[in-house]
Image (cartoon, rainbow, N blue to C red; front, side):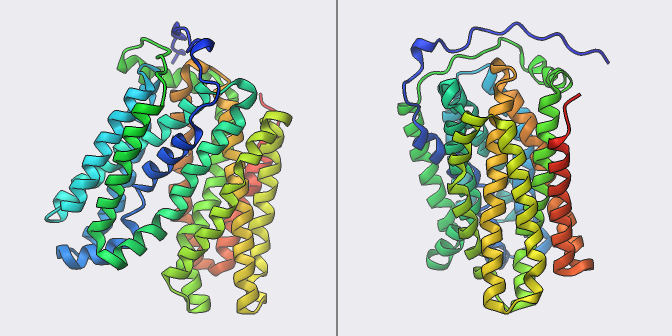
Length: 403
């Protein structure tokens, strides 16, 4: 199949209309609250099943449909950022996400909750509109630091969402989680409408042609394919660890889900350092940072092999330290890869971002599945071997020259 011709882009946002300082805190908060919406339900499944009279299989569809909606939104909705004013698109998704979260909170039964969960996933892709918007509004020499700051908000949303959900549900019931989330997203949507400048579309392609052009972008840019593959492999290790940690802590140390959630705070500490990686990428180049980050991920996962040899207190400290290390490494690599990818074709940033994150999502899903298998058949060391091998493969791939 021959490559589609490259579309004639519109002129990008004129430099004169770029704000001197993009509203980074607003965009980081928006990305964090949006992506958190797809994780709130995970700690609530037992309470959901009890109140709605649904079994484990039924309530298990709630996070499944939310993740499916997010994956579909990455492919079908995120590319719209290239042909729409991103401020309008983000605000529209915030409105849709607010209504979907309210629908989940008021859901009278499981079918209504499942439908709301699907829409939550679709609308939560506003997080993936905010990151390209940050890149578009930032001066080239500051793009890494700006994207890093917004991505820190996004990763904090992932890591802290389960903690917040569990605390709210314990205090006021599971419905309060969705109501509080809806209020937060509504405030963010209003703030985006008032605080984010208009960002001119960069293409006039129709919707079908816009989606088809993603095939051409993938084939045209070896750097995109390499970035997606490396980040996808790192995501396998990341997901394998976090999806099995609660089970491992229960089996090895008799600790419950609350302890696993506390380790999310350690990961969040690593995420907070990611803007440093963005600034380093601005100075030394994204290639340097991605290689350094992949090496740190390998080291951070590999040291976990020593955990069975340590007493409980030292073992838990080692897990927390490793979580800081590999969360920082994966976030630093992601920020640097986004900086690299966004520079390939500035007029196609939303489509490039959609391709990158779709591959990451595949890696996350594979890591969850493979991590469970590794833990079941190989125990803790099996999971550690999987995460270390995936990160080592990412490092080897990143060190190889592009062809």
